Picture 1 (cartoon, helix red, strand yellow):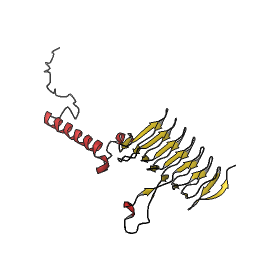
Picture 2: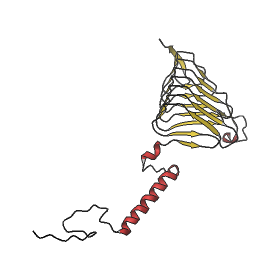
Picture 3: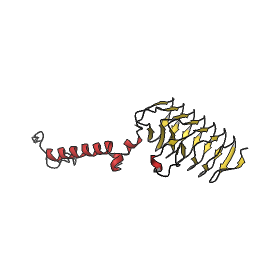
Picture 4: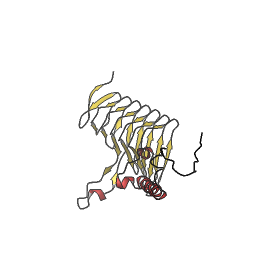
Length: 230
């Protein structure tokens, strides 16, 4: 049997090469350059350009602002992106989350000079915003369920000065307290200054503007008690 000579590095007729192997070195270099530029833009300019070509990068938590302290308890599960927003001012914000916390995608926790405290075994659904501005606090007890797209904001804009645009007027607030074993339905809004008692249920789409008694079920705009649990 006659043996054929094989020259290393030379493509032999009849052999199969991958698409990448068939490119010359110039094509390969251009490919790597393009890939590097695309990854760079995706990572550092995603918010500006709304680029989401690599979904894995969206799962990372982000912290904005540099005036605050955050503490996350043990056995937390962050199932998607979690954004923490502090102010860049001298007002120090604080975020304290208990053990076994669980959150879904696009959750925003914003202690912008204020304080947010979340107890143990709490769940926060997709697209929810919890915010406390300077001098206010949001206190959430244990075993609380917060569904998707809920807004909990412990602040208001001043509106008394007609000569100054409202966006330029100072924010003020009292704070929000949510007891333990509370269920807040999807798209609910909790305004500043309210107290939600233990075991209460806030129906989906409700706008809570006054205190909710313990074990009450509230619904509507503005939210009113429709019955009690049990």
